[in-house]
Length: 264
Image (cartoon, rainbow, N blue to C red; front, side):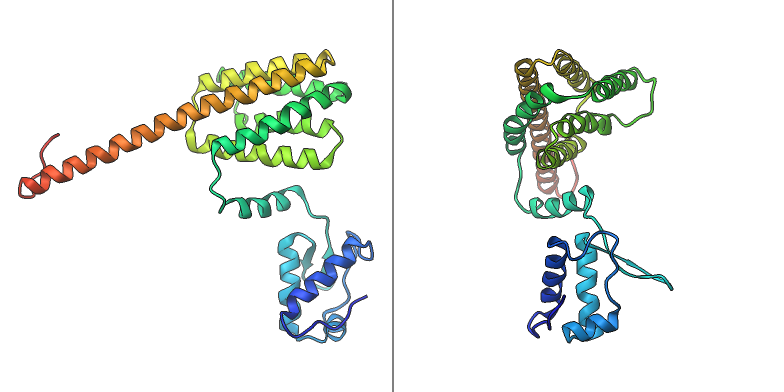
């Protein structure tokens, strides 16, 4: 199955060959790789180089390294969390903005809602209604559930209902970015109430199996969230700027007063 790995960046060539074997179906989730000794001979590399490659594959989510008598390197199915984390690592350096996030949501989510309205099951509708009820109890102080996780789950269910794993993954990823933004901006309870009302309107459209209404309500929801968070961000930036200005003036007066701080 494997060939000798070229000496230059040998560990990378090992990673490429094992990934290719997995993608081609020669290795499947649950399969155990040959022993280290066998792999070292196949790739013609040292134990250190082989282990470097296996650790890289484990980090990427393709392998699970188990210890003990029944241990070894086992092929695993890359899960959503691992894929999302790797994607986040890339986007961390892209200087994202709320506008970027909202633009993607406005392109994606109305379409997802429209498609889901045609195929969503009674079970999924029931779960969406349960989530809205849980959020209502949370806002009334009658539940200890996590409001942000409930809001993600709401959109995740609608995404999964499409039956398209690519749409579902992208939607879940975008929703997690939105939660990160909320963690930074700390929107108030009134914001959460508006989100809940929007979710109720979306569920109503889905229950009616009305694709056009579902699209319109989702688009309205995305725009409302963008406007609310953008306003909150501007308020925070203004407050931060005023705080820095006040600090500068206090320091300036302190210096002019010979080191004695005066009120401004």
